[in-house]
Length: 174
Image (cartoon, rainbow, N blue to C red; front, side, top):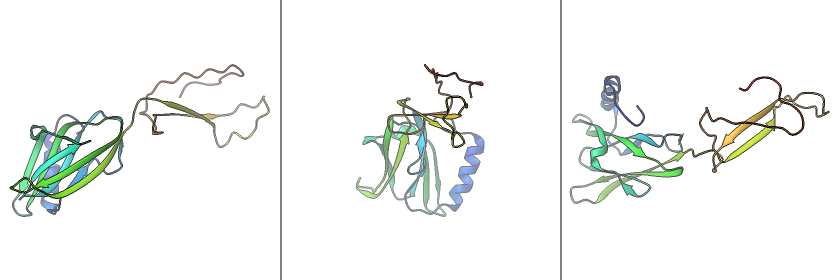
């Protein structure tokens, strides 16, 4: 689940995944380059069982008490951790997993970039592909896209009001 809870079904799925995991360090979720509208999210990582994880988001170390699920498999030598409620700022977010040895030295380093979609910042109105005629009489269909400052589409459900000083809107809102 996203920012909050882990269900029994999630744990059963994680347990099955854990049996198949290989021990190299990896940030599993969110995926590299993924866009999200969530201010907070879970971050899933795995690493060899002889290392201790250190998770950083945008340079800030995430406290170990934010690990909501920790599973270790002796057979495959893997530790899986789910960090809960990790904050993302609008725009680009760097998630870095370090695996620390017994002396605190980083032995592995993995980075993922996650983009948090921001507040509406731009509105694009384009004629639909089938709208070819511009004779001031023929209705045309338009497509409206709401984007954040980075040009990413904002979450569905964003309310937009369109007004025209020439012409009329026909039909209902989508």
